[in-house]
Length: 434
Image 1 (cartoon, rainbow, N blue to C red):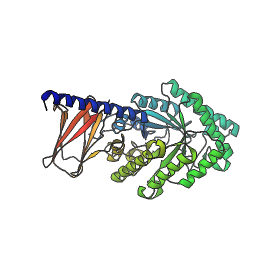
Image 2: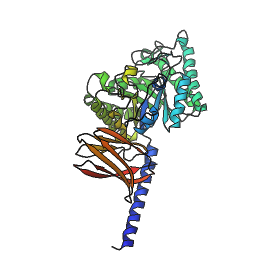
Image 3: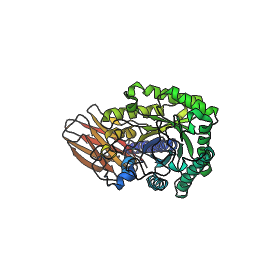
Image 4: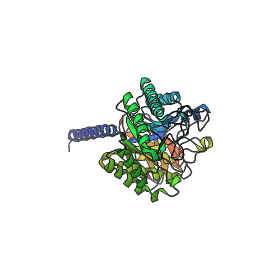
């Protein structure tokens, strides 16, 4: 083969690769698979002086750390008239608007989770806001409409139109007890529809979610959504919680039930589904990572591409601050490796893995951090990144570390990552997207 023929062949291959990548990136953006974090505590954590660090130990804005870990969506709870309690207060309309603006400025989408309470609402408690306690049912309908409209309208006027609004939080047994309990589905249905109508009045593009806990429990979901259908409840998406920790068994015992239930919801009600809350023990890093990978795979496998995504509940809520066992954060202020599940499965491509125990991810990546794991190797690791002409672009030496990261400031393109650990040397293609 002549020199010119070889060059032309190489140029053709490069053009083909970039065209293929362009199609891939376009499809990825259109798919918009949700990789989310509920961050209702973040504002208060920052206000109390909590410091966040990335995997390399650099102090950073928590939202940037989450973005570097593949998070593209935030979920924000809103309470009607909350207290100033550190962990059970705040999340007022104004605080939510401020955080939503920050998230949007980071390029993230926003979900608003209406609790219709002054504090936590969940399957065990759905307490009316104090200001609504003496209201008649007719007045409660107006309260739900006005509160929903006011929050979403304020967000939109502030430049943030949420992608989703969740009408009630884990309302397995209803909301705004006793008026909206499931033993009075006629009234519960009316309350839910008021939230739906207010949401669509602000912006018809906002998708409405109805959310039930124990996403593996098909009987529970069928009972709830059969009743919702019979009462003409209007909504777009079925939201599920999935916490093996609270179920008292390992995720392996229920993960198939979760997948089967989501497919049943799609088939039975012709709705999209999303796991809007998930979490695992922050001390059991590998198990939580494996659980998240399994959940992501089950959601991606939902029939007809109706599985929209997965949201981790308060990954940043480190236990020394929150007292919460199921965060995804270490006492040193860094995210645990469990959160890497969103990177390794965030684009539909798994992390690159070698038998020697070395991983780097994500690939493709979009700037931020390139994460490294050395599971079985020790000593010095020399990491070099070359462009396709062989020019050295970045180099970093890592010594005796099981986890590390490299800041990427590379232009979009195709690169080669070379790892030299003495006893072995490997080279792998890295794709950097826009």
